Image (tube, rainbow over all chains, first blue to last red; front, side, top):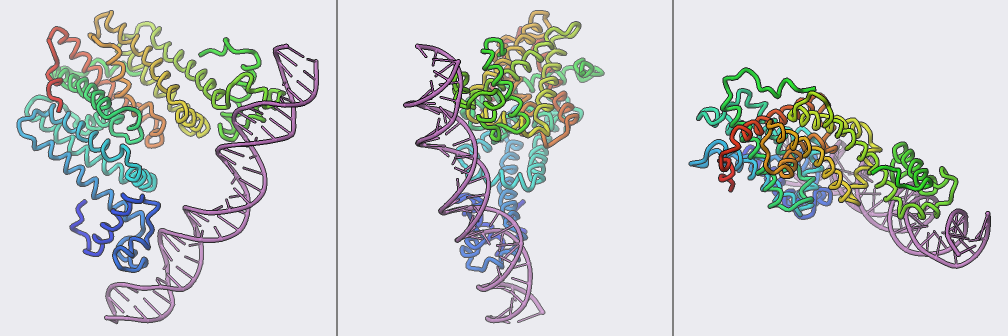
Length: 213
Length: 213
DNA sequence: AGCCTGACTAATATATAAACTGTTCAATCG
DNA sequence: CGATTGAACAGTTTATATATTAGTCAGGCT
């Protein structure tokens, strides 16, 4: 979600609002303040954004677009296997989330507020990141290191398994290094699961699938 | 944490408080009300519990003790492999957490309040459940179906990977069946990881361990 | 006409006062 | 004398009044 399709004035509003959101928090910045920063009246803001929440949504969309672009660079890293890229992906995602939310109450407030009112935005973001992850899996399939038949399903499973390390609510329990080490442990195990499936791709069904109650 | 080491009066207080906590919520039940239910003065409560929060803590300890006992029954299930028991463990844990917190604001409030003020209790609980899970892993090691060298470490990893399905905050996003299916997907993958490690137990190190950044 | 303004309103948030609750402990009871 | 009480206190929650803010729109400006 780039800012290029936005009006010049809209971009100015967004920039002013963003500055205040991060510095003073979402609830503490008023529409009048944003308007003053842009040398316009508060009423005029509504010619460019339907509501204050939509300004926040656009701000978060831009940030998250940048984050997805950032994650996408993992795909282009030369000399890395698909397995390594998968690990890079999750470690980078964890690092970005940790740095954004840890000891940054303002960013956390903005994110919480938006997700509470606009849950769809969070889903879109997860899907966008899932697409990048899916490309990594496809790459592994193509070079023969993976043997994943249902890439979207496995993408979801991986996101679920790493949830603990991407959920901001939990970042205060442990330090960054500790969490990163535990994330690596999960990834190790998942990769070994892939290795097993790759080695047994011809077999009909994994035995574990029949043992659900 | 059984109630048997408690004074008769303490048990009466705990029972009265528990009823009110679940029916009216933690914050809305007063010490006077609990005392009235027990035909005693509010001051007398403090001869049996240091504070209101300690009553809540004891209540949760009892509940969680029962839950751990419940999970432990998975261990005694006859004719189930260690892998099946591991799946049973997590599906049961998920089901218990879901049923307790989904559409039960009072239980959720009590749990949140306690964990906010007494984070240690949550850790103890996680460790107690981890011990049960560890026994399952040991069983798999003993019968040769697993090949886990560091059982406590793998226990932690499994708990991390299943975090999404045990964290009450997230239970409103999807339905129970959907979440259970996704949990099964994670367990499938983890079990395949175990299978791989079991088949390669003689090798020196997994290749994935050297690719961390 | 097409933008833009700023007073206006309903709704939300803040500040203040009143009421209540967790906890203590000197006095009372058995 | 140990067990129990309930008034008293400090801290918190709730209720109320006041102020601010998001969003609207009739009118002014270019």
